Length: 196
Image 1 (cartoon, rainbow, N blue to C red):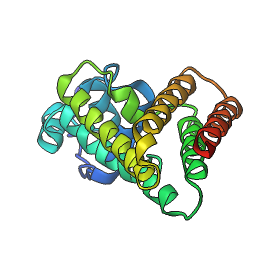
Image 2: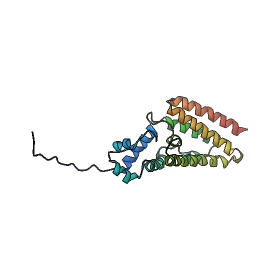
Image 3: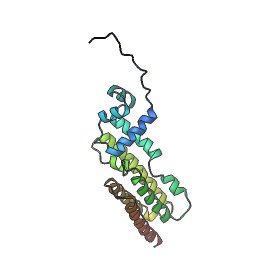
Image 4: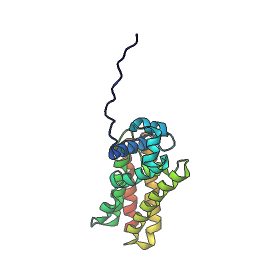
């Protein structure tokens, strides 16, 4: 049966860049860079591919912006931790405890988004994640070197390796309690090394 009713168009939905970034961050963290397609992103953001590319340039371009956002809102607050006056071993132990908490905070987006991104297949995205990872390592090393310059490389490597292990374990579903237990054990090792 034919009708003369012409469908009315509703007002176009407003694109909210901040909400889009929050959604994209959650998706990148949940699925990982490689498993998340542009189609997944456009569907979740409610935009078509041309609008996606106009807004973000590329998937890697969006990911780089997400890493900036993650550094401000979801990463371990290294500057705040190292700003507290206390023995270095306590600060380093706090970094590991915070890592355990952050990596297990969201059951759907476990682990460190930056560390996971350093293994992605896209060279541009991998380089962006690696840049953030190297910057965090440098911040940790610098904080150590301020009071223990001779041990800075060794201790920074230990922290970085432990954080990578915590991230991988969180990603594989290890509980917060077990992650915290590992972080505490590493903290004891740090205290012993720094007491020598």
